[in-house]
Length: 623
Image (cartoon, rainbow, N blue to C red; front, top):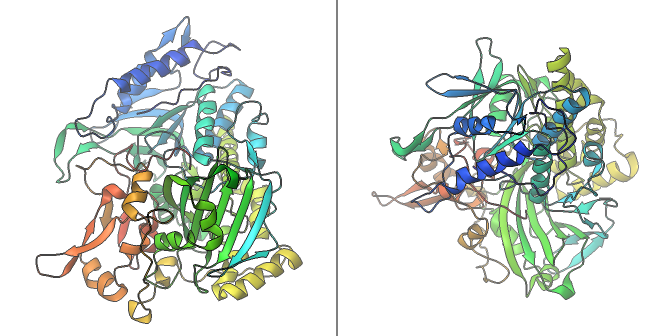
């Protein structure tokens, strides 16, 4: 496990200390060094990063730390769990150290400080470190951060590049036509979201939040009344054949009086809760719809770099029946973020989002910017685009769903970080009142409806479903909604089919012949995958599971031409010759970028994405 080390020393009244002090708690820093030494002494014969220590042992080592009258661990309890597992008990357990989860953790501890009340808050993160699994465009709207940490600029937030120009192009194969920009990015910033959440994690730790990267929550814990009472981490050290390796460690139950799920888009546990408690039906009622975003960070020539320049495009290379578009943002240090977003309700099973992105980069207006540059990092992630119509009731017995696990992205803005953060803050405020004053968690749902999240998403509710009628009608309807009705159209459009049902049978389409990568602007998947720093322990059961192992060969290949070999941006799925001279599906689970496209797009919903061993997956640093 990796622990963030903050260079800041402005610790605010460590909530885990019984002794009040305005100065930094020395045990906080000793504890960090203790954890780091715990990891530096670990080793791995496989070449993979060192395996995590047992979570209970780690927390116990933290709770034993005491320096000069300071102590850590007042609100933590150790107890026996079920099935031979050990258990940790907290007041609030948060799953996911993304913008929503960290905002919730920070807000909870701020309220504790204001009221002089100590609640224990634990954040579990499946990535090897905070930010390792975070990918976003990202043009950042600071509205929620202004509320959460008003003096973020003085406190060193990695938000330094204000938007300086905002362009919108319609692309044809060889031309770029300028259109009026509808985005209004004045006052926003071009950032790396993975860097921002690292800074937020340091702020959370300064307030006394315990953050544990490298531990994947794989199971929801229920009591006898079907109330959620926490989560369990997965067992470590299980071989592919199911046997226990010499490194085997039993998973740990992390129990909370309240549990907040902030796993991000298509969170595996959050989806189970939405289904089990029928939260979609209790909310706005419509299914969620998704897109896949594929991104690279480049370092370009100095003379071409214009910090703060923002560009969005629609049109080529996507056909008129496929919703999507590109982004290109100039960051600091000659770096740019460039990517393509493809809605996953596309019809053609031969379409490959990865290859469409490589094709896009060769547009004359884009290629000339990239020539002479170098790719630094590659990644991919799905995003939810259902908006207002698809928001579930986020409250379940024992907790709530926050951020992109629920789905608060403003599609026409192409932004969801600010709404994710605000949802985490609202959930934290409700959770605090629930634990301290006895308020019901259902107030989180009511508070959402009264917040600027609700107002913002309602105004743009018709943009995404407008494109169900095609690209040109979608542009026309969106323009009417934006410039004429200003979000007050007296009807709410519905989404079309769920994404997996939108895929046509292969006989309705012609295979797409994509250009061969040139190795300078466009690249093959192995090259890109290397740049994502993706790695998993090879000797473990595949975390990508087939509900019916016969469907790929009996349905997906003959009917849909094996679309999983194309919609996955990491070539996890490939059809290889079998012993009967046919083809069979082979799953390269170690390639997985954790984008969740397979969980969404498989025509028969036959692929279940589950968490691998904690710490596995991509290792993003500037995404």
